[in-house]
Image (cartoon, rainbow, N blue to C red; front, side, top):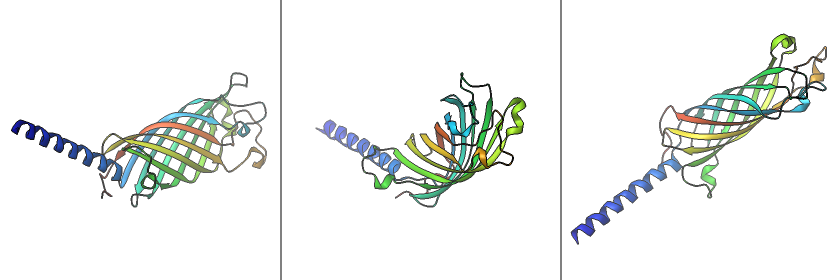
Length: 213
């Protein structure tokens, strides 16, 4: 009987520890986080001059960011993104380096969503920024810079209180057009459009659990 009692107490303690650990994952929010992600991109076809367009999927896309949360729900993020895309097989040859920097508002609705499994969080982010498009090779004269608006959705899975892996779907809308330049840019490799990104990354806490119940 004593043996059964000890086994029962042991199982009860393990259950309590596991339950407590999962509760922390669902409630803990880091005040500061560093985010690194890589993936692929799809540039809008109307951002190129006539008869020039990029392939549907392009690699790489690299995002680097720093995030600050004011509480469990609201925060800010500053991030830098780099994309490269190249011509489709049926278009003239070109390559473009597209980079951007954005200041974004962050909203975490996880506490209001009752259907997500433990360890998962959702993050909505959006904000203005600046884009830089630079064709490679002898097409460099067609480089441009313009304002953008970015909106995205992240899904995070917590490995522990310090580290989570995530995927991010983001759309960067270019607030410009090729016709808006004087003189009008008509050269190959010119890009004034929007970009859709899919990335996979890791988020690392820089400050530990700050907003735990």
